[in-house]
Image 1 (cartoon, rainbow, N blue to C red):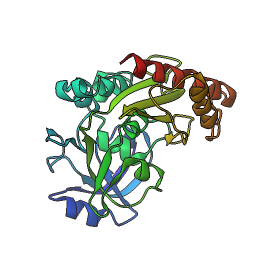
Image 2: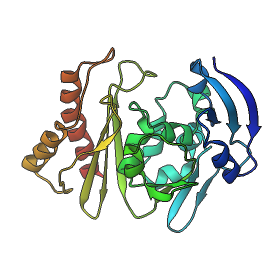
Image 3: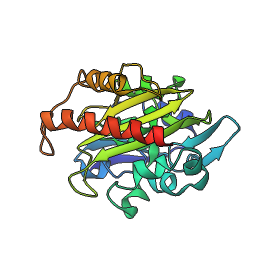
Length: 258
């Protein structure tokens, strides 16, 4: 369990950002992963009073506050109807309902965990993140950046007609994923993301169209093999490489079926 010398409930995002510039500061989002550490925190900054726990829909996008819980994403009707239930699919296997009622979107994305279901699936949706210091940048750019002292405020999910699917392999229902693959289609072009390798999710750098035949799909599977894979207690490197091919094909097939 972590300990903190000082607790501050932030009154503004700017205050949270200023406090977070000290290395001894930790941001408190859901706290689900932080509580499992033995960190000695100088200042614990609580973001719960900043109104970041809402999902807002505009003409261009869904705006997801950093304090939105995984359960909110799982059960939000408009969000799931717009994106083929992909938000329910990316969250429903994570531990249990009690955990998902506490864990937050911002905590999951800002940590950029290699095992993150959300990071993999939302990269496929071509989202943007809003940072207090750096402003709005693509999620795929943010995902590859080293963790810094900026504060994640919101995530924008564009309403541009993009369709997405998410597939993950787990050894047990509520375990961390052995491997995760997400794919999305917009204007006939397909984006494929592979996560839980167990490194951070990464886009497969190969062109793929929704009308692709076997040769082009195989080329994407081959390109995915150029990503870094590793073994751990959940699966070997070879098994993860094999799963990548299987899940990519399943995702592409699902997109073709609509």
